[in-house]
Each structure stands twice: as C-alpha cells, then as structure tokens.
Length: 215
Length: 215
DNA sequence: GTCTATATACTGATAGAC
DNA sequence: GTCTATCAGTATATAGAC
Image (tube, protein in one colour):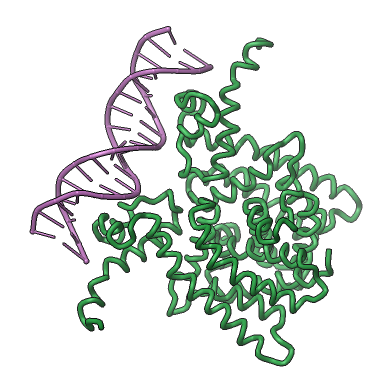
C-alpha cells in the first residue's frame, strides 16, 4: 500500500513550501508575497507550487486547511471535556476552550498562533478568497460555541450573544495578529506571545462583558 | 490670493482619486488594488496619481491623513467635554469619546467607519508601510486615552490598562472592519452599521472588562 | 519530482504632447 | 491639468527536457 522509505522524504519540498507559505502569508498577506518569494524561502523551485497545489490560491487553501481541522478538533475536545460535569461548562471554561487552542504554541502544533495571525490578515485582505473554506471550517464550529455561550447565559437574547461573540473574535484576532503592537506600546512589559499571561488577562475580561444583563 | 471659480472645480480629479482610493484600499488592501483600478473607478487618467501624490504610496498616506486629524480631534474634543465636571469623565464616557468618532458616519465625515476598516486592513497587511504615520497619528493620541483610563481606574496597574486597551482596539477594528461578518452570522438581526446600536452593546461590554480588579 | 525557459499579462512610474 | 504612449520590472502559470 505504501513505501516506507521513499515517500516520507519525497514530499519534503511540499512540506517546505507549506511552511514558508504559512510564514510569508502571515507576515505580508496573500497579495504581498509572490510565488517566487515563497519558493525561494523554501529553497525549492517555484514551478513546484503548480505541481503540488495547482496555483497560488491552492497553496493558500492548503495552508489554511492544514491548521483548521486540528484547531477545531482541539476546541471541541476541550469544550466536551469541560462540559462533562453535572452543571456543564462554566463561562470561563467555554471561553478557554475557544481561545486556548488558537493562542497556544504547543510542541505538536508549532505556528498555531501564527495561523491566527494569518486568519486575521486574510479576513481583511480578501473577502471572497476563502469564503467557502471559512464558511465550512469556521462558521459551523462557531455556531456550536454560540450555543455553548447561550447555555451558560440563559438571561441573554440571541442577539446579545452574537454581539458579544463578535467582540470576542475581535480581541482574539487582534491579540493573535498584532502582538508586536502591544509589546511595543508597553515597552515589552506585556508579552502577548506568552499564552498563559494572555489567557489570564483575556478570559476574565471577556467573561465580565458576557455576564452583563441583556441590553 | 485665490480664484473663486476655477480652482474649486480644477482639483476635482484629486478628490475623485482620494475617494476611490479610500474605497478600494478599504475593500482589497494596498497590494490588492492597482493604480489603474483606482484611476478607473475615479474616472480619471492613471497618470494623475503621480501628478498629485507622487506615487501609489503617497496616495495612501494622503487618504490616511485626510481622516486621521479630524478623527483624533473629535476624540479629544469629546474627552475634554466629558472631563469638564468636578469628578472628571466616567469610564463609559472615556470609552464613548474613543469609540464614537471611529464608528460614526455623520453627515460631515462620510466614510469614517470605512476608514476604521481601512486601518484594520492596513495594520495587518503591511507592517512598515505606514509606521511613521501611525506612530505620530495613532500612538500619541492613544497614550492620552490610556492616561484617561488610568485616571478612571486607579486600582489597575499600567500593565492591566494596556492589555485591556489592546482588547478594546481588537473589538473596535473587528466591529468596524468586519461588519458584514456579524450581519451574516446573525441573519441581519445585528446591524454593525447602526452606530448607536453598536455603541449600546460595545460600551457596557468593554466597561465591565475594564472595571475588573487587577489581575 | 525537479528543473529551465518562457508565454502572457499586469505592475508602478515616467516622458512628453497638448 | 490632463492626456497618450511606453519603459522596465514583475506577476502567475505552463510547456517540456531531464
């Protein structure tokens, strides 16, 4: 069924392209980077982008999909784990289940927070480029979390929940995507790259807003 | 000193270029739009970009500066107005002074919220493109508001204030820049284009987070 | 799978007529 | 001020040798 030696090394170029594309797209956006740039950083020939991914856009969706599934799986796994008890998950736990996997840079999934930055950039840069991908891999899991928030906060209207979830996304993207801005403004005092410090600030901040009475 | 008839109409092309550039940059980012696109939408010859603004980048900074000063002036005017009383401005008033001018689309300053979207896109797309402009027209006024927050919340450390101000920026940019996302997710129920509805949700949400004890 | 070479189109910018 | 024409550079993508 599969060769145990050759194929593992054979698609090294493919992985190198994915890695350098992820880095460069996150740094400069989709239109700010050329296929040549990506191939050059990867140390591979630029024609291989077409060979492996069809075109530049295919490379982007490949980068995107590589992280989407693990991210969503981890979010839902945490949410289920926190919901196991008799009283279900607390508001803080729902927030943590959504935020931690997006901000964490654990050994297994390097570049997870870089991926959050990538999403922040792309969501602004090109509204229709990834619309179907976002629809399937983002909006669907989002709805599950909106429901989880609604269970924690039965006093709120659906409209209130959506507004506050929208604000939550803003803080997440801005924290993941513009870490250097906060680091600079604080003179290095605040370090958004520190996942734990970040969650320690972010979760209570959002929880307080979510818990407000209905508007 | 000036001709009362000719010049007023003469720089119509310049204004058309500024208007179409603002719209297109906000829609597709700096690298996603060509000078030809902008000139075409403006109904003007593309060579006029160089004539009026030197180059494409000059056009962007012109768009930027056109809104920066009025925005900051209005923010500081509101802050001073709210601070007049004996006890100074409340937390909610400081938030309103910062947020309302950025989200408002009042008769005088059409496209103000589009400008907020422009800033959201550019801040991600090109980190060094506008660094000096941002430094001068954004970080300096920001510090004044950070100080105003600190006056309202003497129990917080400087570090806490900066984290929460960073979260505030995230909600503002995401609300101003991705309004259609919330409108879609809510099936039109939430309307981020409605400035008053937006502030009614956003100000209490942020105030609750700001008022928390120090972390 | 990986390479060179190249087709084709578009980019920002400019020179110079009017 | 506004235009045409165009330069030189770069973009994505592909054809075909190896």
